[in-house]
Image (cartoon, rainbow, N blue to C red):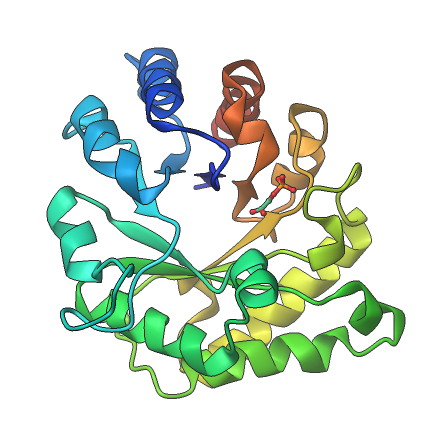
Length: 254
Ligand code: PGA
């Protein structure tokens, strides 16, 4: 199975979210086999997008969740509310949260835990900065990101753990990381995560994110190490996103 996650960031307003969601429902209608698709609109669009998705197979995800279920946290959104709306997933630790809003590994861990406590599946985003890669320290950096969040978590054999490897220097860039870099890091992340979380490697889904386009989706998705894609820019274009889903479908059917 391959997972395709659409991260619409703050780029897509309510009306456009509904148009995009309707288009995704339309182009997946009547198809038996297609990848797991998770749409992540902004908070204010979640409820209306869910109405379009209904009880179908396309999943809803949030871009963030609070560290607690309730309380005096002005501006935050409770994971329980997200669950009630119909979200199954939530992005946690996206590099834009870490870099622009100063989210530390500790805060990411708290968000990850609270998501799980409300039965949402967190998609934990990790990835090194350009300077870290240039100094050759990316494995230690990513290990720390994984360890600080996962070490205190308990997983059962049934749990699937979603990790998105998003090298910060590839997000919004012209080109994704090289396939060698991606495969090396995915293998590394899978091995390290299995050890830290005491979970089977098969239960870890390692997605790649950063400059994914319809043109490079095939090269990425045909690799068994790549369990899916976290798509930013290209997921906000119906035409591009549809082509990425088609590529994933072809690979699943092969
Ligand atoms: P991008 O963003 O596909 O536009 O590079 C990916 C992300 O930030 O999740």
